[in-house]
Image (tube, rainbow, N blue to C red; front, side, top):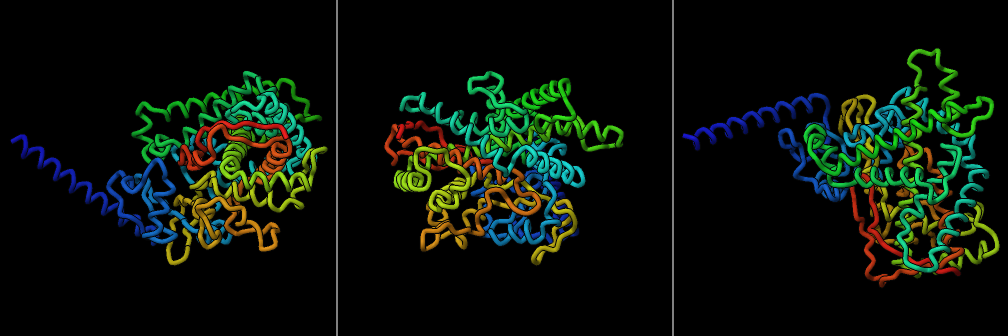
Length: 496
C-alpha cells in the first residue's frame, strides 16, 4: 500500500509539472518568438545543461547546437544569450537603444546597487547617474594630464614597494589592488592611502571577497535559485556581508564629508554629489539622495579597483609564462622611453608591441566572460525572432573575445592578434573587454591609461622571474563565473 501510494504521488507530481511546463512554455511563446534553446525542466529550467564552475563554457557549447542567438531558462526566467561577435555588436551597437537597459542578476541585487547606482540602474535614473558621474570624473582629471600624473605617482610608489621585496618571491595580488585602488580613491574619496593603512586594507579585503564570491559556484547557483539558495548556509552569505560592510564604510565617509563640506571648493566625487543633493533637495523624487551617493560611490570604487588590478595580476602571470614576450617589451621600453624618465601616455603611440600585448592580455584573460546582463526596453524584432520587452539578454563577451572569425588563434596568447604585417598596432573588432554600446564601461579610458602606465613602469624597472619553472604555470582561471580570476602564484621582481 505504501509503495502504491508513493508511486501514485510521484506520477501525479510529474503530471502537474508537465502541465505547468507546457502552460509556461505556451505563455512564453505567445509573448514573442523567442530564439530556440534547450527544453527547460519545470521549476529548475536548464540547470542540468550548466557547469557552475565554468558557466560561460557551458553556454558556448549550447551555442554550437542552437546557434549564436538562443534562449536559456535560468530557473523560471527565460534569457536570451548572444554568443558571437556579430550578434553582440548587432544588439549592443546597431540596436543600442533597444538593448540598453540593465538586466537582472539575483546575486547582483546588492552588488549592482539595488537599482540606485550607475551600474545597475535603468531609465531616467541611469541617465542622470551616468551623465553626472562622467562629468564629475572628467572634472577631476579622467582622460587628462592631471589623472595621468596621479597614476605615474602611484606607479612610483608601487615600484618602491616591489624594491622592498629584495628579489624574494611574493604574491602580487594586494600590491596591485593597493596601487590601482589609490588612483580611484584619490578621485572618489579625495585621498590616497598608505599601503599599510588598516582601513584601506579592510576596504580591499571586502572588495576582493565580493568579486571572488560573485564568481564562485555558490554565487552562480544563487543567481538561478535565489529563493532556495538564499536560505541555505554557504559562502554566498559571506559575499552579501562583505557588500553590506563595504557600503556601511562608504556611508560613514559620506557623513564625514558632509560635516566638512565647502560647496565652493569640492574635494572629490562625494563632495560633488553632496552639492548636487543640496541643489535638488526641493525636487520631489530627486535621484540625488543618500542611497544614490553610497551606491554610485560603491560602483566607482569597486569597478575602478578590482578589474584593473586583476588584469595586471593576470597579465604578469602571462609574462612569466612567456618570457620571450617580456624580453620584447623590455627592448621596446628601452628604445622608446629609456631608463631616466617615467613612462607617459604619449609613449603608447610609439610602442606598438607593448600596446598589442596589453590588448591581448585583456582579450586572453576574458575578465568578465558573460558580460553584465542587459534587458530589452521594448518588444524587439531581432533577426528572425521577437524578444519580449523586459527579457534579460546575456551578451557573451567571451564569445566576442574568442571569436575565430576575429582572431586566428583564439585559445592562444598571441600579441600578433593586434599587429599587422609591418609590426604596427592593428585594431580588431573583436576587442570588447569593456562591452559596447550605451552601457560600455564609463571607466574605459582610465583603465587603459592605468594598464599602460603601471605595466611599462614595472617593466622599465624590473625583470620578472618565477620561482617555479614557467612550464608549470597554469593560465587557466581558478574561478570562472562572473569574472575569471587567475590562480595564486608568486614572482620575483629583479631590479634592472
